[in-house]
Image (tube, rainbow, N blue to C red):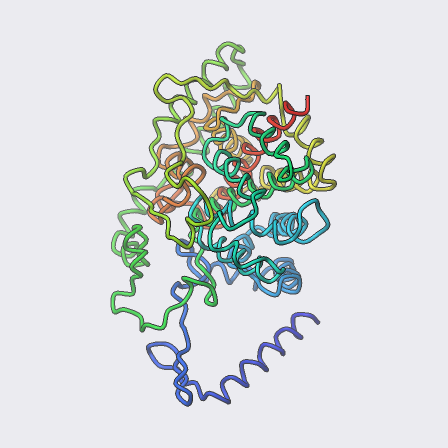
Length: 489
């Protein structure tokens, strides 16, 4: 009923526009002739630069549940963004994600609506994610936000400016967060944050840092009505976008040229991975490593993770539109134990999401702990028991290796996990992709996306990105909530 109503309204509007302006379609896009109005054409082909448009669109056609979720999202927000379309590969997760995001942004909570969207802008800007920044600039203005705040962070209230340091540390080096940072925010006289407000702000910051990772990791393109989503120029003969060439993100021509070679090069990749999982399970059943050996393997993996390079040679200079929303643009990700520095290992047995973080969030911001927990569990446990073309496969070991590798990069250790499994299951190209997307997402390229798990489906790679996003968010939250707990005690 709702879908047909929306369809009729949209069709009616489009029909009137076509009738009044006599728009004629040409090979170069759409041109409105009567009034000299230029009609834009989309810059990209579909919601993602990495995933063929036809694959994304097929999902909603064949899955009634996904279609229903899309309709509900459109009815609630008046739009269906490209992030949701790509997440539509996994409707169970998408439903949980949208429910959580809706609660954080629109339902009753400690922070006013315009503060929430401004914090979203601040968080996304730290990773130069203009897609999310532009989205929330529009939302900020729609809920009555002061446009002067958008001229730069220094035009925002002192209370929000004070959040800049927390935003910076959480986004790039959360292990450096201390209770002193929390105290600074809670004891700022007339600009002080309450504990409830701070919890809300922390959840929003971590949500948008991790969502920026997903946005870059899936190559999300701006919608046609957004900045950077359209052009009035005719398409070039080469079919390449300048930004694609700069980032190594060509269209399909390179794939066609190297097609047969790549297929032969990666044949058996999935079978090798499945065999390693089987062998690791057999070894685990036969013999369990000692606690000392497990600790040694964690330290070894933590050290090796620092040797995995992101695309550091590619300098990303933020545009003025984005950089004005945060301070200290030179501050970025740095490995936590460089040049002899020592950051103590964060042991989950001492402070975990399940036993500590969840209850703290739920106490100060009711229901959000439950929503976050459901979303974490959904991403972590989501499985279709498939790997590429193989069915009836238990992927638990692989999913846990991915999640724990991300937490290992953040210095977080699970005492009951054998970190020796990570090197067996995650190859170097995959680790480069993971580290770049989680730590420096703005440097993620299509080439990186294509270089790992080359026999796997795009839906499986999107699933990986959901895991990376949620593992990153939980890691940031753990450091922030531990600092808040230490302040409170």
